[in-house]
Length: 319
Image 1 (cartoon, rainbow, N blue to C red):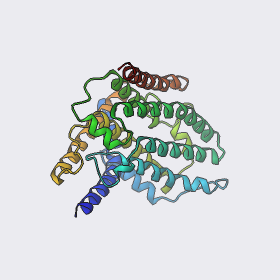
Image 2 (tube, rainbow, N blue to C red):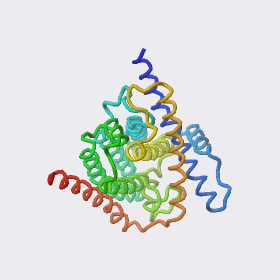
Image 3 (cartoon, rainbow, N blue to C red):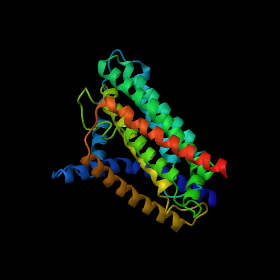
Image 4 (cartoon, helix red, strand yellow):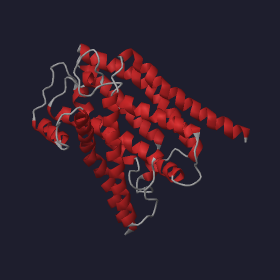
């Protein structure tokens, strides 16, 4: 019976992340619209957009290979698996043993690699620009993410997310400068990886500035719907990762009761809503930076993560 309950909650987590992904994007858009004194679209507009795109026919260029048609589903699958591995409302679920930070980084890196290949597959200039910029930003974001993982591993003694979350919610953590550096670095990486302001503007189609939109410019119909849903899932993934590691209060521990897990799910939705409003306020109050300044911005995350890991290593060596 316990295995069945764990399986139900594991499937609930997988369904939860994909169900709230469009809602989080809609909340960010609505917040930005309200701050700009506009009515803005309703919160469920992303769901309508996905349904509308899924009903349309996918127009594929004659020069497109099988890779162009296969990449949307691969990117969606890798992102969904990575997002489902992050403990959102409870630790110690059925598949928690596979929720390793290094595995999540690898899944996201594979999705980025194939999406960049799809941007190059058609042979358009926009796809080449977007893919080259994505490769440049990824070459800085991935090492920064790995260094952040090392910092958390030095603190919690493991890269397994359930272990990290259980340690972070305990009283053994305290205030640490290295964790503050890792938090700021993770926020910078999340902004860069999701193409949010100030790195990229997901609402623009200006060819001189767009990165993610340039790679998917040739997609349409159901292919575009799958890629857009994968992008929404990626945003939920990073927000959930920040919540799981740095705001783990209310997270149900392993072997918790059904009531505690349901309460954890409710608190997770509240924290997700707060993060969405905060992201909307942040993007409204800051301007997009030039593309040539983005490596400096992402490089700051790499430096902060490295300093945090070095600080922990030196402190442990001196002890």
